[in-house]
Image (cartoon, rainbow over all chains, first blue to last red; front, side):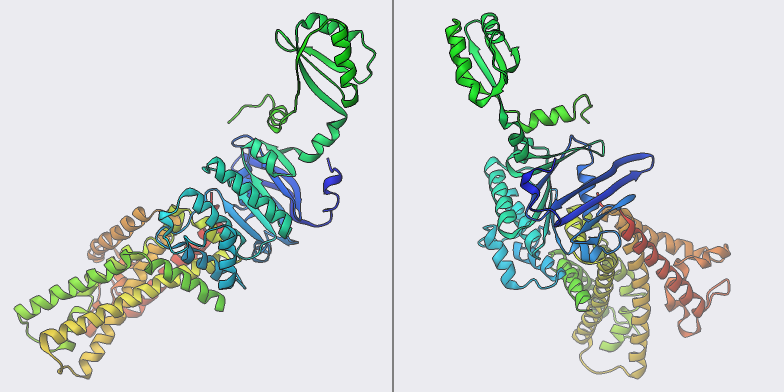
Length: 320
Length: 253
């Protein structure tokens, strides 16, 4: 689980969940959830609708109380030392909501007053970072959703947090906005070493943004995966799909080969055959097939997307 | 403390940046204006100076009929609007305790009520000068105005605190205004029945208007000024305890 990639960050867990549980009546929404996020890391919280993502995030920031367990942020407990713990957190919880009758600047000033050491210069610095400097004097009700998202990021970064917590940050954004958001997140994590926990149901989005994903279902931890790591582990074997003239013949030719790494030969459709093998063995197979009289029209690599894996992890369960 | 001042500033800004902020004062001005007009048109005995005008219309029988309602409408939104707009989420994830945030909100509702009362007195004084010109009135009138203002403050603060609590509990500004108004109306009717049912004297309503004890006035069922003051104090404390308890525990989802 812990691949080479995040060993360097070990021991600097900025956000730590220990057996976090939320019960309402007899229903358990989140059940003994534990994971951690280290400095400069972007972690995705994944799960089908109703898995408890939002509840988990709201417990981390103290909007919802925990029934059991605790969350430590920068070493401080959210339960017993809330003010000092939350100081390290910047958050956007669902769509960022602001006071619509106030200007962007007035809204930011509200939050600046609530945190220590946020100067006027810092407000300008942050608004420049998100590219809102020209819209600050407009009332928020005149903002587009994209602009509100940016103002949301500005408000989250204002007090120089060490953890950013984003609940569905790309909700309602257009493709350009989503991409921009992703680029911000990556550069913030890299340059300032901020840890980011982001929940989303857009799997492809998470795949592009996160270095690790935590998958939960029905309030329980399913798996923690390092996204870069998954590909590294599988890099010895390549999955290929071949479009051939005769699948029957191709199968016979392949069966007769003495290639050790070759496995998982299956027919997929009328003229396709899939298999996995070591990268180096590919030319040999192609040559053997051609020699055996099988015409090859196409060779495609098959990459397992996060979506495929996600569905595998949460297989057989209802989608709420 | 600097901290709390910042929270208070925030809450005040949230109130006065709304366009409706001035509407409340305009309503008050219209009411005083109408009173001034009728005083000018139909002179009354014992009402013949600017200070007299303030003493009569600044009392519970004058502006007291409308000012508490305006205050209730104005501050009913203070807590519910944060929930309605969704801003409560961003408000509560700051390095401030929920108690402090709610305390700043309560403080600002009190501040608004006091500003409204002071503004009303100033308007009445100006209207009085317009009708009667300067001069007139004596030390007795001044102390009467002081006494009236005190009753007004107590009455308004009691209902504003009730409204505040309802706002915290219901999170809905419509319901809050409705329930608070209902309490004022029903409370008035209930107070009339205090003769028949003794338990009513332990409710807030017959006690909340202290001006009934003016000039040696009495109330049925052995109610006295100290009794009424104690009942009001107990209710205010209970309303506040309930508000803080609920607000601190509430899951925001």
